[in-house]
Length: 200
Image 1 (cartoon, rainbow, N blue to C red):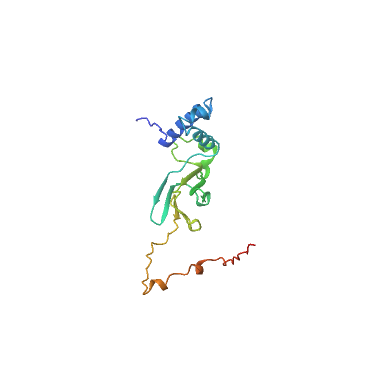
Image 2: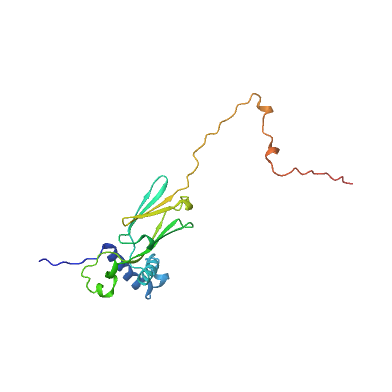
């Protein structure tokens, strides 16, 4: 019988390499002044790695669709319970924040059962995913909706609909000299009377 080898997903391998690089070059002796010119993302990677090791187990995969009327985000969260997922929106950065936790079902989450685990490829544990949308697009924050069906989270982020281009009609007048607009009708300030002093 052929042997079965377990290979972690590509993202996990990449994340591990990023963490090792950040630990060796972003924190130990390199310093921001020396390294950031060559490795501008080292400090950010180090911070993300520390946060990931401390609080998070994985980052869920997402699809982002940019349609005419809305951004639509699909996140794969198989095995999650709907009440264990949180969706937040940061209007200052147009950033969608997905957080939550996926647990193993029933008694399989016990330490005793985990000792019998021979192959583990599913993502379980706490997760966080930040999706930054276009910074130049106005978002209708109050109309964002989310639904969770069959392990797929769908978040619809509507865009603010800009008014359509309007054509202005130009009027024709018979006697233009008598029909110019009186500018005083559009001035909010009351006219000020100026008196001239008589000089001796």
